[in-house]
Amino acid sequence: MTLAIFIAPLAAALFCGIWLRLARRGAWLDHPGDRSSHTRATPSGGGVGIILALALSVVVAAAGGVSWSVSYGWLLALALVLMLVGLADDRFNLPARMRLGIYGLCSAALLWGLGPAAVAHAYLPAWVMLPVVFLGLLWLLNLYNFMDGIDGLASLQCLLAAGSAALLAFVGGDPVFALFCALLAGCQLGFLVWNWPPARLFMGDAGSIPLGFLLGGLALYGASSGALPLGCWLVLLAGFITDASCTLLIRWRRGARLMEAHSEHAYQRLGRYWGSHRAVDFALIALNAAWLFPLAWTIWLWPEFQLLLVILAYLPLLLGMAKLRALP
Image (tube, helix red, strand yellow):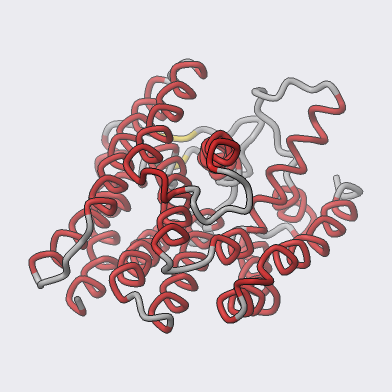
């Protein structure tokens, strides 16, 4: 188990470094556009290194005696599929309907693999919650891609959320769930060697889509298995969920084309206002350390109050979104 934890960041750093050289040779570059916040063409597709490193570390842990349930294997297999789809999209710009259809199939396959337990923890009947959970998972895949727009941010969010979940699950007595979360977090450390501002490598859709899927899948599996309340994940991911969801609603009300590239997210506005990607990254760290993680810990202690605590977590973020709309 300990070996796998060390292997995850080292393998991610190595695999991403190899991918960086291949991307440079093959001119696999992300060029600046309407949505991007970078000013020079940068190698992309580093998500391949992240997901392959996660798969390797999971195999190493299994060889060391960790007994993974079928659900972990199913989650990882679907993430590998999404990595390949993201890679193809990075390279060939797949049609939006095709991508959305594959995302939907993978989300449905995950819920099928988890079974009725995936929604058994909810307040409403399963037949009501099933489509809600499906749409929520599908939205998380897409919003994570939307939020991957400045150096380090998407990988840092995954590191903070998965690392925090690993700590809470370990203290709560589920070392296997905690280990999977820790391996996912460790892979982000390895990738940040290349993606920390100023980034030399982007994760691309090959990373952002499967990462959103993995975080959503872990949230559902953790809640259904009793490893971690769902409210903990909703709080730990609140920064991304609030920014992406509010921005989408604002653009919808304005009549903007929702599939059109843009740079109106709060994190992009902050990046322009501060003139620094690194400052936005540190702001996310501060938000999690000072507000979100303490609330997630409180939910872990008193899960019967998680609905109220989730609402409490989002209130200042919503107010902050309203304030940030004034920024250019």
